[in-house]
Length: 110
Image (cartoon, rainbow, N blue to C red; front, side):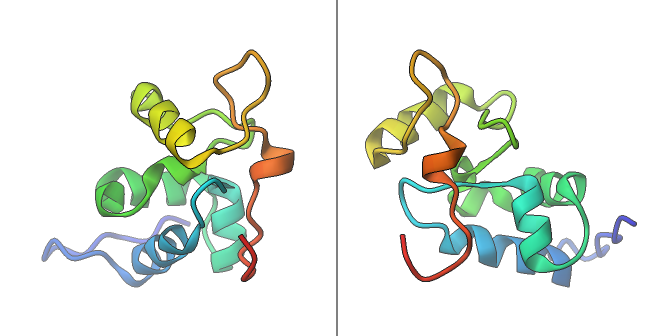
């Protein structure tokens, strides 16, 4: 179920929870949209994507990827630049993040 966005232009509680998780992802690590939904404990990948598309500009959005390691559509070039800067593990010969090495589980380690 999709939670309604408030009319006053402020993010709702779900969006705030999503953004809070994204802000905690360490440099060089990523979480998938589904990982974030699971961590927050509600919603799904599409709800996380919706929150990110509307409110994600102020957080490290490039650290949120599709389950196969691809960055957000339309933002690939900027995301790949960020991955190079942060040393994010990539799949050899690919523009995809190596999810096995780069996935962050929400714990304290980076």
